[in-house]
Length: 300
Image 1: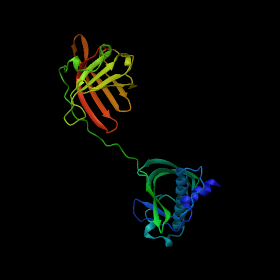
Image 2: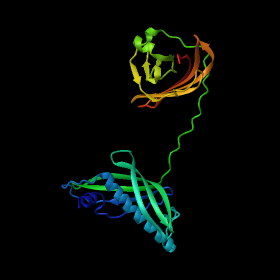
Image 3: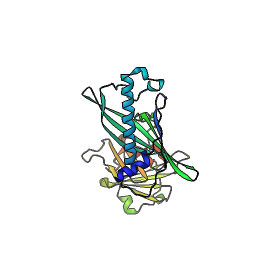
Image 4: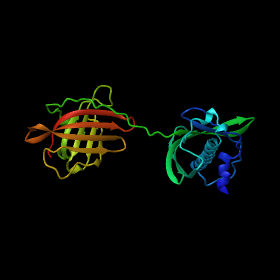
């Protein structure tokens, strides 16, 4: 009973709905009457929205099937169907909507997965459901309006970014240990310790990084004598390896993510194997990225 009361806030008092004739978009608009809200319900808004999506999808599919059976009643609005594979023997087996994101307080996106049964064959399709809610005051009375839009669901592809060609350095960039905020114990515990000098207009002009022994983590310091940050290991390099093997290690906390890709250099420095380390720092809040290639002599 409570579910019906809550759902009435979203669905009750439907005056009309219409179907958009845009090629890539099917939309339904529901105008809702003012409903008293004195009684609380255990049904969440997301559950009510899912029920609303289900209702409108069933209506839409029934309408498309009717147009297939009686094409003489079709209009130009029915040409661009969300599900062109539907026929008169099609039926919906299940609908599942899960939140994608909240664009604003009044606009919410859902990924909706529909399982169809077509001539005893199951087919699964996905669409994107957008729900836009608004409040209107007329003569001192508050009215709620909810618009439901359906679009084909297209998974966003990650852009292909061509990697910049970074020249491999031939010397180790030197710096004074007095520039560090590390303790002496931390310095001695570092397997690799190096400096990065980012390009202008970045969050820092100097960056110091120390990889701790035994994959215990890393220390990141921005600016000379700046504050240091401990980064736990997210992905450790292989334990069983020999000197001169390539390796990858990833560190991260809530603010920063660092990826190290080490390849052996054709040189020995201070009786130690030297590595070219492809360094990448991502500031998670802003997605700002600092990249550089450094030559480092690691203890292991």
